[in-house]
Image (cartoon, rainbow, N blue to C red; front, top):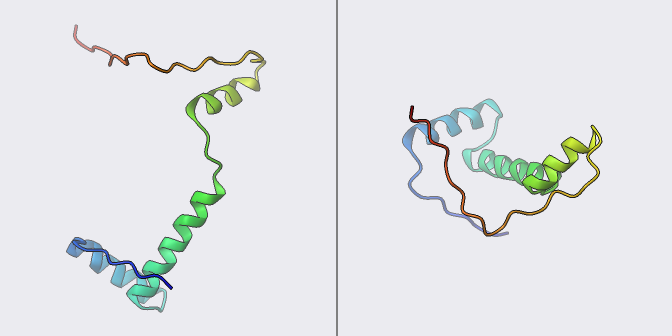
Length: 83
């Protein structure tokens, strides 16, 4: 098995991990392994979709049939909230 070293974890995070591990009856290392395993499972279960795909699928339910063109290479200008 591979090893992973994580440095500079905040003291509060370490304490919370220790308490969580104790609640689940395992070592802190075992708890971290379980957290990482669950995080990867959740990530793999969600199909990767772009924003355009998500928008198109949302509007497809109400009759959108045309493709939404990609907008690449356009400068994005933030809105101005000045009065």
